[in-house]
Image (spheres, rainbow, N blue to C red):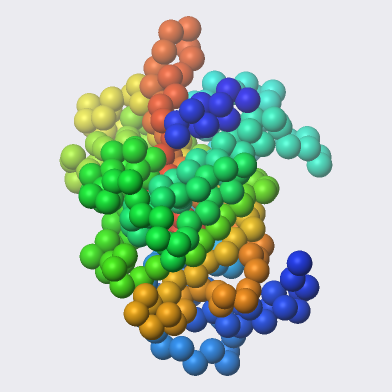
Length: 334
């Protein structure tokens, strides 16, 4: 529950008619992993304006148990329970609360996933409100945005670049995908609603190089790929002198005290998504006016840095949203 509270502080159609609405979706995204659900009969060739995935299924790689942990993927060698144990230790969660129990989810997993869903809701609302310079209605767990109603933002000069609240919630690489020079609110309008109703923790792991953080790699680019070098050294001669020399070298650069934990949750939502051309009134992306909200699944990927504390506990930093629906293929930094 503490994890959930911390995250919170940071921040009838029939099945056939629903299918018909999905067949009317207009936009395609680049690459199959971000493709909006489309019918083969769709003829629109409009360019995608907003990189948004509206789909009732999880990305295929999640079903294949690929957590995008990098080239050196401990999943291939270590049991998933060991990976979860290491990550949970960084969050001050005891081993007893990690051991699997058939047909049971530990409270910390449910609380963490719920907290991610809340943070995802807040972040998406702030992002779209900033992009389209429109007020956001966020009440009773539902985010609603409708720029066609003329509810202009009280601070029209706010942009993604100067919105500190948004930058504290989302990684800059993820924010860069939502290009404000393309999404001109003078040309386009959005109608959007998002109501998360179920969340489940899908993956959690600690970056396998202790001490390594995203900020350090951005400052010292040569640290990117450190995990590759350790992997190759181990494959050549196991835990020999060369391997431990590399570990010592990395420790001098990054230290031992910090650790990066990455986790992702699937978030089931009721959602309506539509982007229109203001001049023509044409739907250029998303759902038609006569469609009702549909059930979709989003994948929200978060990251946090922990540090040493007294009595062997860890200080947990602020979780940050680093990827949504594999837009950045996990936004891997190590």
